[in-house]
Length: 179
Image (tube, rainbow, N blue to C red; front, side, top):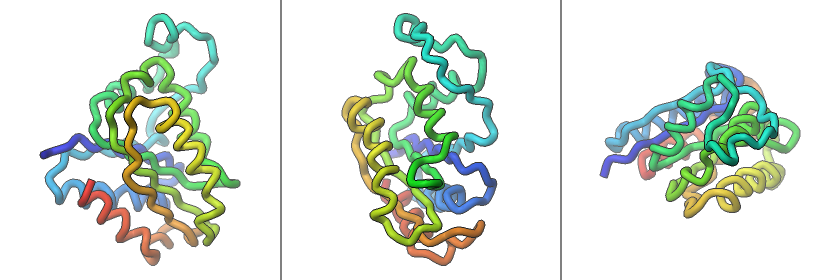
């Protein structure tokens, strides 16, 4: 069965380590016959949530930026990959802002399979626990029937491209192939 795979890369660096793992996941998913789209948040204008509450009634945000069409893609996807570099023990600001802005339609992001891709210069997976907890707070506590399928830990990669020399590079490809 062909699935719609949506990869959200929050890497601020094109070709950064988490971005490269997204590409590997996409390669595997495409080879498995799935329809894949990768969105690089750095290429989109996404404002911070202002907490105005209008979307609680209208299910639309009053802000005029790039978020509305991205929400459409989240709702339509079967598989969602959330990828982030980990700075100071949490997801980067781009991904957090993106998640915050799902409020108008988060109840429609249901029955999805989720994969998390995390990259860090730190070599200890345990030090990424806070990031995983935050992502699970969104997917497991806020979204209906979300299924966490895998976490790809890209640890020990500081400089751009170093991730290619870690087990995570192949793990991302295999996860995509079997999503």
